Amino acid sequence: MELIVNGDRSEVPEGTTVADVVRGLTAPGGGEVPGGIAAAVNDEVVRRAVWGSTPLSPDDRVDVLTAVQGG
Image (tube, rainbow, N blue to C red; front, side, top):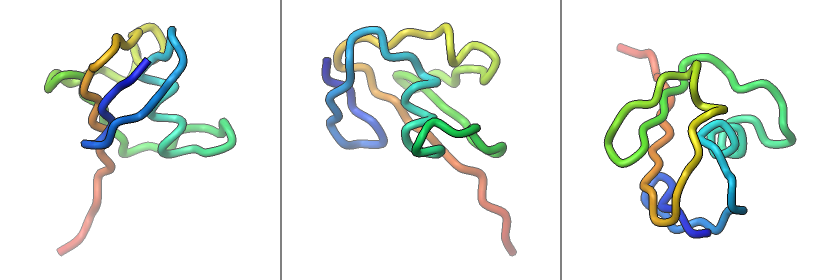
């Protein structure tokens, strides 16, 4: 199925969750997702606690954001 991830079209398998997309962007190789990451689906923030149980649908817009600290 096709999603829009951070503004780019991406092909992902059916049954992909928010956690799968975040892990693919922030922890290649299936490692632990670092802190300071937020995710939104269709402009709605998804709490980290439910990323793994939040399935995605074709044409969903997923935004994965990383907090950056600086002055």
